[in-house]
Length: 259
Image (cartoon, rainbow, N blue to C red; front, side):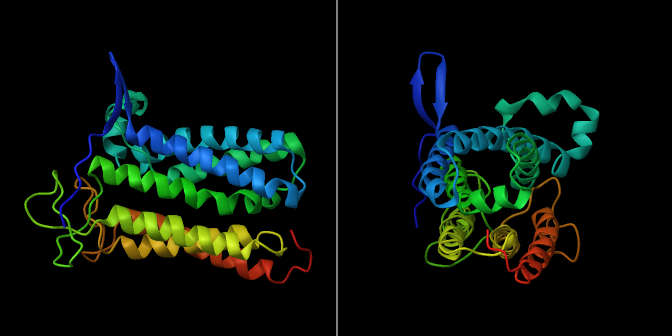
C-alpha cells in the first residue's frame, strides 16, 4: 500500500505552526472530556470534578511522558545533557512515563476530593484508550515508529523507513490499544464492578497489546533489542503492567463492593 504522505504541519499562521501531532493530543483530551461527562452522572461525579481530573491528568501526561521518554529511552544522553529534558520541540513522549505521571495526578486529585484512588482510576480508565488512539494516529501522520519489513498486503513504504514496505505498527496500536481496548473497557464498566477491577483490566489489556505489537515494531535505533534478539524496552516496561494488572484484577474479583 502507498503511505498517504500528510504534511505534519496542519496549519501555518505566519511563524506559528500547528502540528497534527499536537492536535491529536487535543482531540484525545476532548474525547476524554466528552466521555467523562457521559460517565459522570452514572458515577455521581460533577462536571467540575471531571474537568479538574482531566486538567491534572493532562499535566501528568505531558510531564510524565516527557520525563519517561528521556529517562527510559535516552538516559545516557540525558545525563550528559540534562537540559535536553526541556527541548520538547525535538519530540519524544513515552506512554509508560505518561502513565506514571497520570498516576501521580490521581494521587493529587484524591487528596483534593477525598475520593479513593481506585475510584478515580476506575472512572477514567475507559477514557484513556481514546487518547491512545489519537496519539498513534499522530505517529502515523509523522511517519514515525513504523514496523519491521513485511510482505503483508497492507505493508507500507514510509518516507523515513527506507525503500522496503513495513508493518504500519502505529495503526496496529491505534486499533488494539485504542479502539479494541476502549470497547472492552467501556462494555465491562457499563455495569457496577468491584473496586479496582476496571483499572486492573486496563493495565492488563494495554500491557498485553503493547507487548505483542512490539514483535512487529522496530525498536529505537540507539537501544535496539535488549535481550534474546527480540526483547525491546517497550516490552520490558509492559511486563510490570501485565503482572500488576492481573494481580489487581484477580484481587478485585474477591471484593463484593461494586465501584
